[in-house]
Length: 70
Ligand SMILES: [Zn+2]
Image 1 (cartoon, helix red, strand yellow):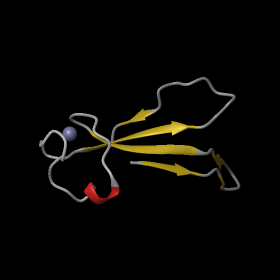
Image 2 (cartoon, protein in one colour):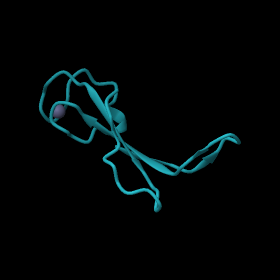
Image 3 (cartoon, helix red, strand yellow):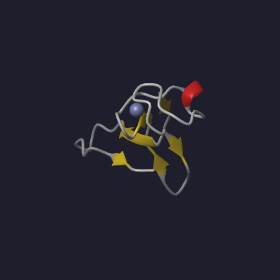
Image 4 (cartoon, helix red, strand yellow):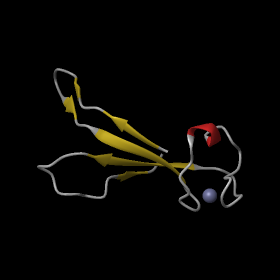
């Protein structure tokens, strides 16, 4: 599941536009919204642990593989 968050101006800092992708940490399956509450991955059948990938939309910063383990 990919969710695109628009840029947010917080005053002291600006949160750039970014995309959050939620995947199965075991197999990388793209977990959709209805499957977020599931106990097991519908693709690999393992216990579902979510991994969140954040991709920042920034033209001035080179891609740095912004992966975040949750
Ligand atoms: Zn899986």
